Length: 79
Image 1 (tube, rainbow, N blue to C red):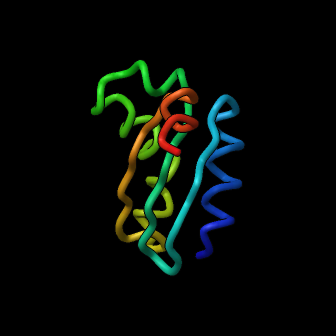
Image 2 (image 1 turned 90 degrees about the vertical axis):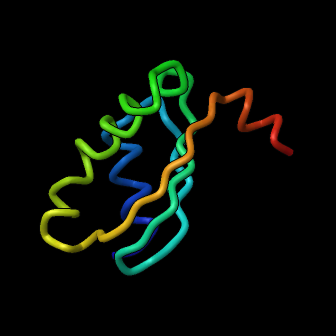
């Protein structure tokens, strides 16, 4: 599995989010930029992402995912 596939998939499922993905194979790091998700609790944020990735996790296509969440302003301010 490629990072571009994960990015495209998540951005289709989360239309108000920008997703930056690093990694390949079965391990990925996600930076999720979304004002909507940034306003949720950490657990709720992760649940939103895992709800979409679970089929790939279940079939072994994705083994490990780390996530960071940013509001749009926080993403731009990080320089």
